[in-house]
Amino acid sequence: GQQVMQIPQYQHVQEGEDFTTYCNSSTTLSNIQWYKQRPGGHPVFLIQLVKSGEVKKQKRLTFQFGEAKKNSSLHITATQTTDVGTYFCAGGVGGSTLGRLYFGRGTQLTVWP
Amino acid sequence: DAGITQSPRHKVTETGTPVTLRCHQTENHRYMYWYRQDPGHGLRLIHYSYGVKDTDKGEVSDGYSVSRSKTEDFLLTLESATSSQTSVYFCAIGRGNNQPQHFGDGTRLSIL
Image 1 (cartoon, rainbow over the protein chains, first blue to last red):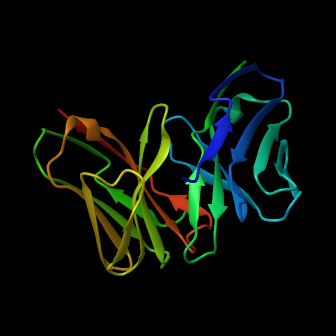
Image 2: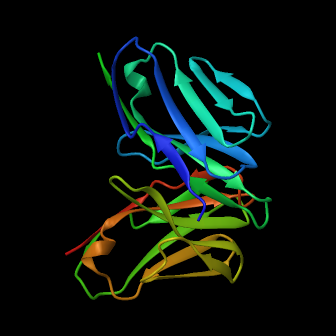
């Protein structure tokens, strides 16, 4: 069945270092979404990418959608302790009515001060 | 955050008892979802709804049933709870089935 694979599962960095998490799908996606979940909290929607090769930035966060629309990455520049949490990608398949959203298992980011 | 309320927020119950979790939204979104979250498994879809009385199974639906009698309410029922159903349960809402979802605060359910 449809799967969205996300790596790494865990990442420990020192404050100021960069961080990247990767998401891969076996099939072409209609869109890719990224969510952040703080410890003890709920997933919060960050961004959606729709176009092939699309790149979007939110301050220190850079999101990319691959040319084939099968992979994506989230890069954080100069991590801060406020970046701690689990980052999930979610791949959209099909249309808005009959399609589905498939979540990766997430990358848990720990930041040492 | 979107207007989503989950109740109860915490529950401890015994094996074999029925449990119902409620999700209430004030956003008038068509789609509503129930997920469970366990360490190492991320978010796994249990059931979802695409309208009043319209529901479908997710990847881990065994042992769970749902009902949606009103646009704003989506209920998740464990008919006879088992210890393997101890988890954190999240409700989410969305405008389309592959569109961004907004999550409730979650229900922490412990089955002893």
